[in-house]
Length: 256
Image (cartoon, rainbow, N blue to C red):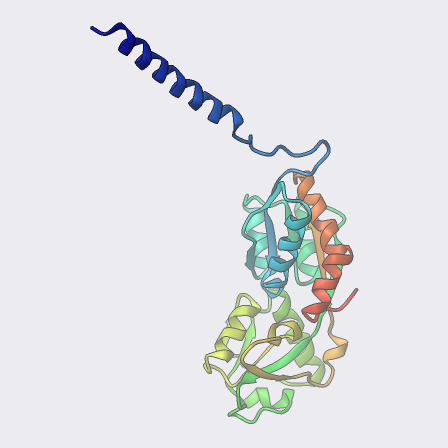
């Protein structure tokens, strides 16, 4: 056997092994967060009317805090979210569409000291072209009208508005969140419905602010729940800060 051939082969194997080790050792390690940098995950429950504005706020938040992961936000009627939390669902942050529903959560002892961050009012939404010719709240009494269920904030606000106007409406359906009301109007399954002013922005519907709507204002509170991560607390502050307020204003929300 050729001793030189063995020696050369062994040298080649050794070079390959050393090269592999060198490649591994020279690979960039996963970036580590800087000292004091915010880390962790945030789970947010938010009223349906806050979609998609909270998606945009979450993107801005993670751009500022790249080592924080905001889980896909859970959107639903505020009362539905409160019930889920009371039954053991996990979240770090809750944002509801009115203070009454938030108080229900506070009463459970799961959080305290919510802060208002936005306001909203109701509009009458109709399908494109307004085929039923709806021009006032009174017209809703004889139309196929879809409303939010009374236990959710948009439903409570709708009833307050209708009562103030002396209008009695038998709803064709009562939905658990405002997004469901809007979907039925877009699909032409109803002549009209009451939704928030922010919901019709960019939607394929027509709308108008009925008389008295400026007197029925929903204040949206937000809170970091007990046991929330530091990132959860930071998210609530971000929503109430200048960037969050700017995004909310761009989507038509008012300031409390």
